[in-house]
Length: 236
Image 1 (cartoon, rainbow, N blue to C red):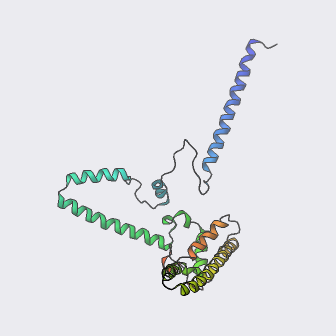
Image 2: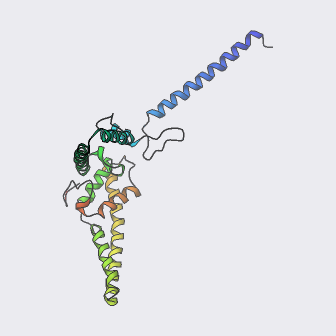
Image 3: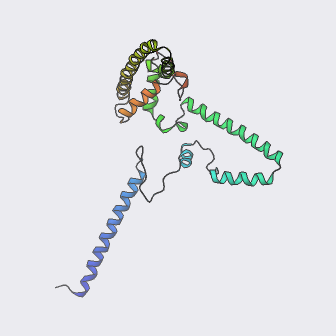
């Protein structure tokens, strides 16, 4: 039989257990918060999605953390327009265009140079930088995909007036497309193999990395972003 004064011990034990559980949950939450988020992570409902501007500030792309948002900037433009004459507003817009042009030129130059802070998510990481060099150091038939597409368009137009010639060119085009597909598979496999040898502990390999290598190889060398950092034939 339990005495009246023994009930408090039970309550204290329950309270202690509850506090211990809360403490464990809090420590687990803090550990989870300290862990880096995986690529493509989407916050669950109830949590605000990180803004792109905040992410850029964290990477150092936006140099002024106190920079105005788009809505604040639009409101400021309205207020400035009201406070200026027509000629002053025209001059202000001209100078603003020149500043934006210079800023965009600088950002593009950083992207072309491969600055990680300015690259798109698909281009970031040492594995992808290595794959870019791996692709840029080689010649591929897929470099001619875009010119070949224009030729196919011309073939389709010529077929209306020269059916015999169009049939021959269509056969040649089919052979060329088959070669491109086979080479595309070889590019993806080769890029993955090279990346695994260079980064044996990395998990950034597979179909995604192979497609990344193929998409870069299918672009003319001068059109690629970031710009090629190695010459053709270089040892990477």
